[in-house]
Amino acid sequence: MPDSNQEIYVALLAGIVLALLLVGFIVAIFFLYQQKRKKQEQEMVTMKDRYEQELLRSQLEIQEATLKGIAQELHDNMGQVLSVVKLWLASLPLEKGHPAYEGLQDSRQMLNKVIFDMSDLTKSLHTDRITDIGLVEAIRFDEEFHFEGQKSIFLFRIYQEMTNNILKHSKATHVNISIIYSTNDTFVLKVQDDGIGFDPNAKKASQSSSSGLGLKNMLNRAQLIGATVKIESEPGKGTAITIEMPNAN
Image (tube, rainbow, N blue to C red; front, side, top):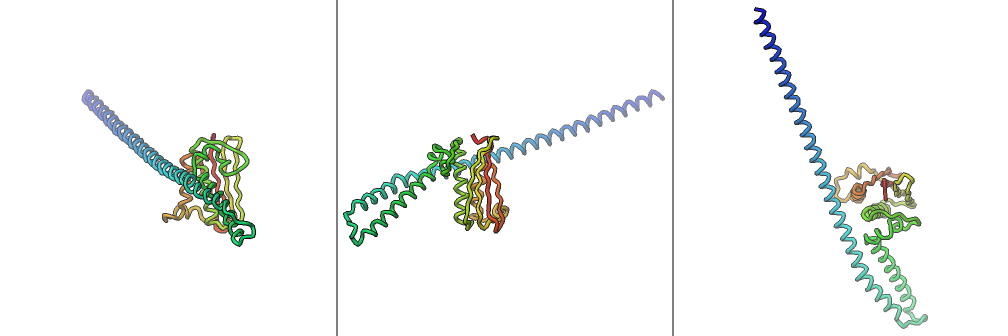
């Protein structure tokens, strides 16, 4: 009888051990499945992010190529035509006392301004110039910093977007633009105005195809070059936008 009880205990113990091993096996399989699933989800998120980044980069590169083409056309065609008109006006044999003399001088001044403004426009659109002369020179500051070409172009486009938004929407009377290159290798571009301000969260959340488009373009470009964008604004209290980019060189 004791032998029988002992066999029962051994069988029971073996059953418990097998049950524990089975539970452990099931838990291990479930854990490995969860890990694999989590890894697959992370890979899918990474692939999606890479796809979106590449798509955005391609769109911006196409946009830059288009702007470069427009700049080249303006320089090669319109610039030459305006230069010919300028020479033609300069060659008109009108004396100072002629009734049309003052009008001719006004026309020449306006034409000179158009040529000058168009030259500025073509320079700002042409990406090669931004890369060659450096970001700060492109913004017309005294100091000069040189970055890798794509970063300079994107930073300048962000600057253009900020100033364009100020001119179009802010109703500002004063604008302060500062560029800082700190000792910890961080580049900072800050544009501040005393305009009417806006609600940044409402702009970001807007579903309108046009509302907040400039803001989205800035954020997209900043993301591609590893820069951060800080927007401080309230209705009636002006706007300050700060772009920071570590390891700018």
